[in-house]
Image 1 (cartoon, rainbow, N blue to C red):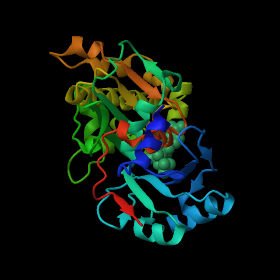
Image 2: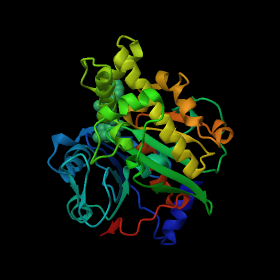
Image 3: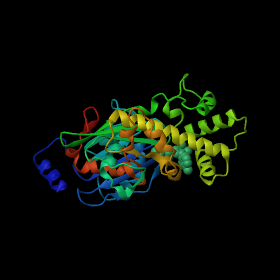
Image 4: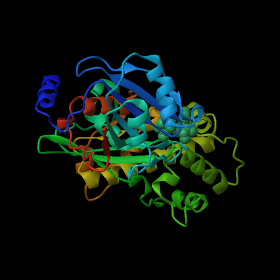
Length: 348
Ligand SMILES: Nc1ncnc2c1ncn2[C@@H]1O[C@H](COP(=O)(O)OP(=O)(O)OP(=O)(O)O)[C@@H](O)[C@H]1O
C-alpha cells in the first residue's frame, strides 16, 4: 500500500517523494554499507561492505563497488553519514572522505541526493525493524506512539531521539554523546580521577565507546596499581565475559553501569515510554553483560522517577545492517517520517 502511495505521489509531482531506483548508504568511519531499492516492494539489492580506507573518495567507492557491478542506474540516493551535514562539502568525522552531492549528481548520474546524519538513520531503523531484530533488556512494554531514544556506543557515542507527531515519526538528531557524566559511588570516586578527560571534563564519549572502554579499563587498573594487560575494546570485553581478568570484568561492569545511567537520563529527557534502543557495534557484543541486572539497576535509579523508569523497555538492536533498514523505510515512504531535508537535499 505504501508503495502505491509513493507512486501516486510521484504522479502528482510530490516534491518529498524520491524516484526509484534509490541508492541507500550508511557511511561510517571504517565501513560503508550500500544497497539499491529497485521499487517500493522488492527486497533491497545488497552489495558487499566497503572499507572506506580502500578508496580515495566516496564517488570512487560508489562507482567501483556499486555502479560497476550492476546494470541498475540509481536515480536518487539517500546517504547517512557520521558527521554534521552543513553546506555542499560534508566532511566525515572519522574518515578522510568528503561527500559532495553536486559532484555525485554530475559524476554518478544521480538526479536527487539526500544526506542524513548516521544516528537519524539508526532512529529510523527503530521504526523499521520488528522485535525479532532486538533483544529485550529487562521489563516494560513499549507504548506504540510514545517517544523513543536510540543510543549507540561504537567508534563514538551516537544519540538520537524519535518522536511521533502529526501521524509521522520524527527523528531528533543531536550530540547527546557529549553530555557530561560524573562519579556516583565511592568506588567511582576512586576510578574517575584516572579517566582521561577531554579539555578538563568527562563526557559520555570518554567512556561509552570503544576508546572509552579502554579508558575505563586503564583507569580501573591505575586505581588498583595493576598493570593493564589489554589494549583493545574486544580484548577487554572478551576477558570480562569469560571472567578471566578481574580488571576487565570491573571495567565492563562500570561501562554497563555508565551506559545505564546515560540511557536513563536520555529516557527522562524524551519520556521514552516507546523504548530505549541500544545500537552500534558494541551493544550487541555485550548482551550477557547488559542482561546481568547492572544496566537496568543504573537505568532505573532515577529518583523520584524510579516507578516511571521501571516501565520503560530497553532493547539491543541485533540487526547487522540496522541503519540501512531505516534508510530503506524512509526512502520508500518519506511521507511516513518527518525528516527535514532543507539544506540536505540536492537535485540535478
Ligand atoms: N567485541 C568487541 N567488544 C567491544 N568493542 C568492540 C568489539 N569489537 C569492536 N569493538 C569496538 O567497536 C567500535 C566500532 O563500533 P561500530 O562497529 O559501531 O563502528 P561505527 O561507529 O559504526 O563505525 P563504522 O561504521 O565505521 O564501522 C570500535 O571502537 C571497536 O574497537
